[in-house]
Length: 304
Image (tube, rainbow, N blue to C red; front, side):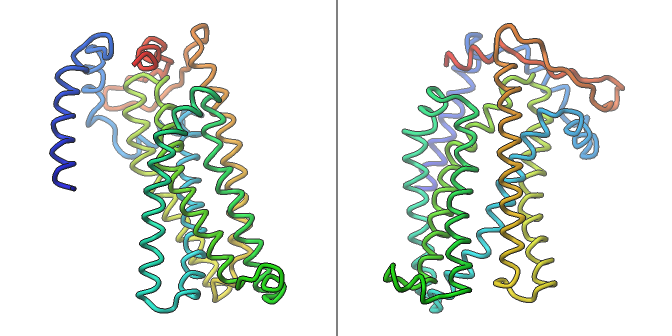
């Protein structure tokens, strides 16, 4: 299956470049020169400086960092609870395999029936808010039962008929499944759409900095937070309240960043809107780069 999918991808990629990207209705050949001029001229430091000079790109970067940070923070606690529920390594492996399978089904369903319809009918901002909303709701359930379990395990058992540990693992599993499914559908779709109003140069530099650095920064940031709390409080359970505070704070700021980015995105995609410009650091030749909305490109891509 992997080899067959890879060969099919090669053929589709070649057909796309030979047939679609050579048609001026779908692609402007003039942009090839612009993209070629950017490659290799900006260092890592200059790329980060370029990113810091644009609020628009900073909002995208913060959204990417927030997702990876929140996922890392919750996943450590969830896997710790699952290991307590299934101490046998074989049972733990079977459980995690089931989770991966369900993630694939959810991601496929949402990609086919949810993401595109949500963007068309409800707009970019609403669709981009789905991922933090899912993480917020599932995190409330996860931490609520986690703390109830720590305080009074028998209280949960008396009216639900399930062990508190099983309920905590269930909410953690639901969060992991829904958030991963949302990531592969609505999150990635809205993130890539956010780059559409920018010119090719800004897309190239912005995506290089965001996809190459920010996602890793979010994952490593979550690990640093957990390690710091473990040093201070010794156990994962003792550090959980402080992890929850950080997690909910990040989600709230994530929602704010999405709303602010959504306002700029809607303005940039209006035909009558003014171009978005900002100065960038020199890249060898001393020139500055202006980032502006390419409404013609957006209209063509929407038509496709």
